Length: 489
Image (cartoon, rainbow, N blue to C red; front, side, top):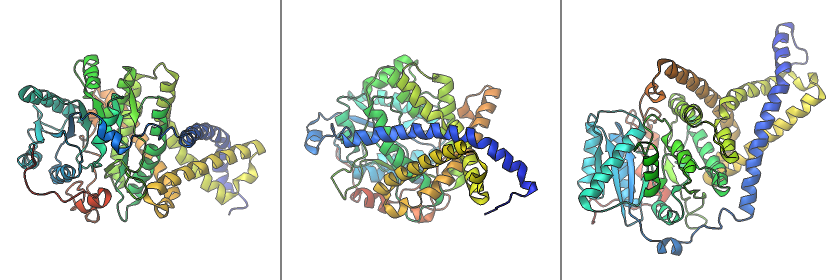
């Protein structure tokens, strides 16, 4: 610890002392905002609001069986889509569903992978876009929706629910049953999303485990229970057909906005404004202690570059693009949650500065040179940050175990740096897109630009793209091996 500040360090020390009070006030306001959600979450948990309407298995079985169409938009994902379809066909315990996998005319390998599965399973269909790719994920989803309409005209069948998924998703066996049950009361149903628990996970992959564990345990549940708008997560999202038809009528037949980088988030907001009922299924175990959580398991990037691309897309879509397109709303609850979704534009860069000042303060005994008021503000802010870490550790320990949760403080500092970099990159790319008068989506590198090439330790081959390991999937959900025979209709 430095007891005396050398002359060459005094200008920096003065700047730190000058910035400490306003920075502490901003972080204190943000921390109190998070504390409010924590208290609402604890209140709802203690009063049983999360479990009040959870159906038992017998109630789910009594619900009328609705026909479900699963949409899977694809671009150059031939290395993974076959295994994804095989695993999920074997795992899903629901009698009335079809899978429509979207591909592009210039992506022959992905077409071949889909066709190889569709030849064996009549519930799998190739939905070919009319133009070459890549385009946005939303554009591909829109063409899948059109293909479903043609399929219904040809067969006389009608799908009552649409569920969206990605190429690397491991669908929980009971997911469709839960969505079917809640669709009797809600137009929009979101299943929790968690990262696959990977052995020897990298620091980067670990932050996805941490953040999704906390967000889908706490924030999403609070939003739903207090009747605020529920954003889509992009996967495990169920829409009643009538809700999608409302979106189509309101937006010139664009069910998913083609220019949106986060069409899932936007659809949640659009449906809320159209008066559609929304819900988030609380993160619960399927059959009591020892069983897995009812959630879609997904693989995420495990290197800085890929994670930065993905988070840049999220920041552009959720924070900047939605701000430009939808403003701040009129209801106080909508304004509040939009604020929470967008405050990272300021909070992430300031968080990096706060971390730097914290370590600088430890090294130079900064508290000895501040006023009592500033010291109290700093202590209050630090206390809220420690509480914030404790809440995240509890959420992570519940899903991944206590040992993994011990790494949360280190990963939180790393995540803050990554998020700040994503904010700066997103702001630059968005400004560049606006200057060129092009859609932000066109400044990206394609729908799957944020995907991870899974290393061999995750069950893939280097450079082969995201490959879910079948053994990992069976360990998570206990799915049976897929018999290589044609599935009966």
